[in-house]
Length: 160
Image 1 (cartoon, rainbow, N blue to C red):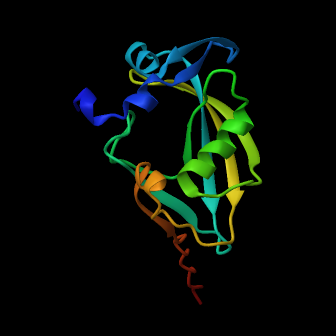
Image 2 (image 1 turned 45 degrees about the vertical axis):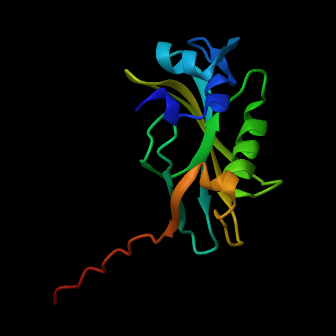
Image 3 (image 1 turned 135 degrees about the vertical axis):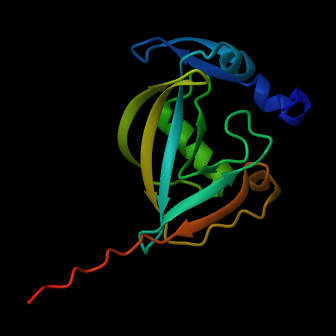
């Protein structure tokens, strides 16, 4: 993907860089964090509706990480000096249009591979209203979205 396809404002935002114990150490532009695979924090919010269906979305092709992939959560990179919960709520508001969300903290997990080194702050959100992604700001974040049904387990027949 060429650099011209990624939003330069987002690419230059200052990301909170952390050490191996998840302690904040400095800020760095997002593009530097990606290029050098620096350890950072990110929020992951799993959204469920009243039917306990999980919200699934397709990332736009302009994303700097996993463009065009489906994701089971909404969220994003923590900016420098931004509290984790504030980041998660900001991302939910930006991507989903849900203001003043009540998030349930689940865990913080570390994940590292050759493309990413991230401390994942994991939350759930139970949202009982409709979610609209038609506004231009959300269209820049999400290509497609749907609530998915849980597959029902088949009952085993008893043998007589």
